[in-house]
View 1 (tube, one colour):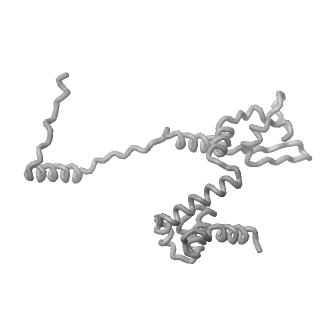
View 2 (spheres, rainbow, N blue to C red):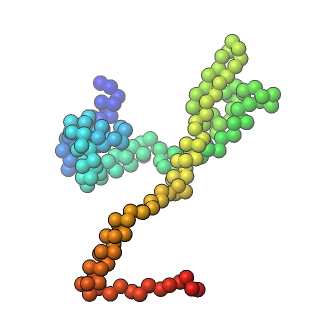
View 3 (tube, rainbow, N blue to C red):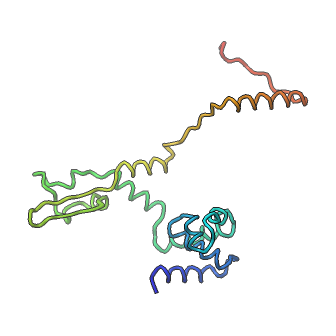
Length: 189
C-alpha cells in the first residue's frame, strides 16, 4: 500500500464522525492534495463541474477547514512559518555566497539564512566550480506584498449602459415618490 493510500485511509477514517457521505469524505482528502476542486471531484468519482458545488456545501467546507487545521498542527506549518520563509528569500544577500576573493563558498560555509533560499546547488569537484540557483526573490516579494495588501486591484467601470441604467432607475424611483437629497456643489469652495 502506497503512503498516499495510507494517508487517504487514515484521513477518511478520522472523518467518520462527520455527516458526510463516503464520496464527500474522499473529495475532502483529494482536495487537500492540490486544492483543485475540479481535479479532486474527478479523483473522488464525481464530474469535474461538481467540485465547486461541493466546496459550497457547508459540511464539506467545514471538513476541509478541520482537516487543514489538523494538517497544520501535525506538520507544524503555519501561515507564520510560510511568511518567515518568504522573508528569508526576499532578504537574501547573494554576497554571502562568496568568499572575499570572489569564489563560491563551500556549502557548509554559507550562512543558513542564505542556504534556505537556495533552490539548487551543483558543484564540479574536478574543476572546483560551483553553481547556485536561488529561489525567485521577486516572486517572494510579490507574495509578501499580496499578503500585506499592497497590491490591490482597481476596477474602473466605464460602461455607458450602466450610467444609463442608473439614470433610468433614478427617474423611476422619483416617479414612485422617492426624494433624493439635493446635490451639494463643492466646486465653489
